[in-house]
Image (cartoon, rainbow, N blue to C red; front, side, top):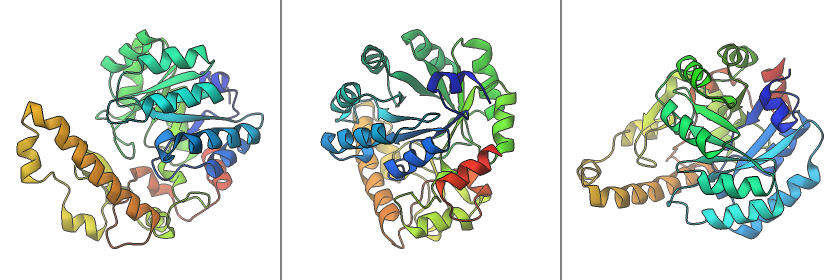
Length: 315
């Protein structure tokens, strides 16, 4: 299948293996490239710039025709490693960068100088027009079926609105677990899709077997929104532990969030606490299971190699 996304990244199928914090790794992306799609890893999955640099070199050495790789950058002030990560990506090179949670202007300018394409996460038309004006190569349209931090609009409504008002390719993010879902997104006008949650239950994912099995055992009806991870609503699996602690911000956090001067610091503290809890749950078995996932795990019936998941999405 040929779309503007396959042409941009020189891939066989219009699919990006979405960057997932703690989940994505080079093994997954190498298999993604072999399967004819693009793979992406959050730069924050690497604690040091040397580790990030090593990952880029590993992926460059493993790259095959029909596949491509990129990295996700958090481009707001909460990511103190941002500028160093951007510098390493531009020095070493990759096929594309996906920006999230902030203005992508600096990333677009620096990446384009290095010959790297930039795709930007957006949840509405306002921000889509902004990133287009800044020179983004494509828009990642994050809808209300996405895993993790999601948008508010349905896939159909968001894609159609962006296609009607933007002149760069629209890539749909959220709600894809099988080939028919991809066909549906393309029928709305998307040039490709970004798929994350189905790859959590891959043999290559560097998370616990319990996390992977949860994506098999639970389904779309078990996905809930929580404010307890980053301060911004985020989709997680409704495990007994989540039911116990609840999904709403604490009374104190709610009060402090109304204070303009303190709001930023409260969010940063909540983000730090939530990320540590998520990391513990992803990396070792614990009763404190805070597992991020989207409703597309509905189609996950067993833990499979990345290769087999790609086949499910493309045949």
